[in-house]
Image 1 (tube, rainbow, N blue to C red):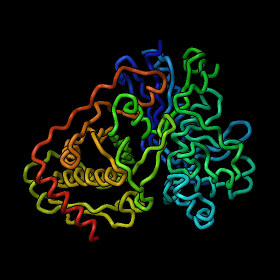
Image 2 (cartoon, rainbow, N blue to C red):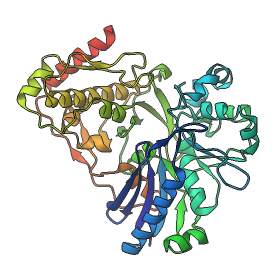
Image 3 (tube, helix red, strand yellow):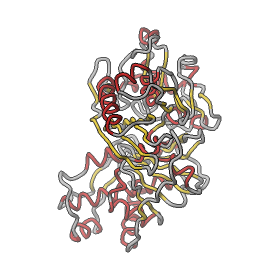
Image 4 (tube, helix red, strand yellow):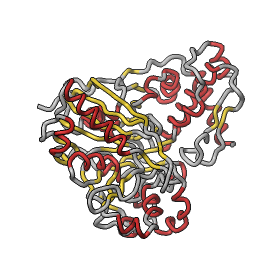
Length: 450
C-alpha cells in the first residue's frame, strides 16, 4: 500500500523535496534549496545539475529515515527543457524572465494562435513558452541538436525513469502550445517545427514509469518505485479540491505568482489584456484563471522586519495609504499601471498592512475577472497572512486558509493515490467588514481613474 510520497517541488524561488504521508496528508519532512538563476552564456538559466544532486541526496535521506513508496513531481510553469538525441541537455534551461524572446516578438506574433484557440494571453519576456522556443530555435545549430522538448515536471520524471512525456497542465499553462477546449496540441507546434519533438502529452496522474536501476542504486529506493507524470504547481494546489468539493468554488495558489482558478463559476468573457487565461487541470479540463506576481511584489515592497501591526498603523492605512499595482510591470490585471505607495508609510507596521491589503485587493480583482463564485480557498504562504485573509474575507464572504504549508506538495502527492478527504482549511472569521470594504471601494475608484 502506498502511504509515503516524495514530492519534487520546484518553484520559481526555491527547489524543495517534501515527504507526504497519504494516510493523513501530513508533510512529515521538507528540505529546500534556493532556485538561483545563473548568468549566461548562452542565457540566464537554472542550475539543473545542482538541483539533481540535491534531490538525489534528499531522496536517499528521506528513504533511509522514513521510507518512500512513490515519487511525484510539480514545478512552476512557462518552462521546458531541450534534450538532444542522447537525452542530454541540448542547451541550458532558459529563465522565463529573460527578455531575449522580445528580440523576435514581431515574428512570433505573426505565427502564434489566437486566444480563442489556446486560452493563452500574449505575455512579456518568455512567459509564453512558445515564445521561448521560437527565439531559441532561431539558432540553426541548436535547432538541429534538439531531439525532444519536455515540459519541466517531466524533465525530472525523465531523469528518474528514462521515459519522455509532457503533461496537460504544463502545456495548458499559457504556453500557446495547447488547445484546451479541443484537448490537443495547438497549431503552433507544427509552425515551430516541433511535431514529433514535443514529448507526448499525458494526464498528470499517469505513472510515467519506475525509477531506473541507477537511481535505485544511488538513493537506496526499491527498483520498482513508481514516478507519476507530474503537474504544474498551481494545478497541484487545485487538484485536492476537484474531488472533495462541490462547485462553485475557487482556489488561490500563492507563491511567486498568485493564481486564481474558478471551478463552476459564472460564465464570463476572459480578457487576455488583463492576464486572464485558461489553465488545464489534472483531469485535462479547462479552468478560467487570472494571476499577478504577488509573491514577487511582496518581496519587493515588504518591510525589512516582521513588525507587529498596531491600531495606529491600521488608522494610518485606513486614512488613505494605498499601493497602486505595477511594481512588477507587464503582468496582472493592471499591466500598464505604474506601481507604488501613494505616500511613504510612517512605520513598518503600516507598510506591512497596506501591502497585505493590496495583495488581497488584487486577488479579489482576479477572482472577479474569472467569474469566481462560492468559497475561496487560499493555498501557500499567503494562507498564513491574517490581514490578507481578513480583507479577502470582507470582500468575498467565505474564505478558507489551507492548513498545508506546501499546498503544491500535497496536491502532487495525491496524484499517486487517493488520500483521505482533505481536512477543511481554517475558516476565516468575519469581523467588522465595513471599513475594509470602504477602503477597497476607494482603491477600486483609484484604479478606474488612473
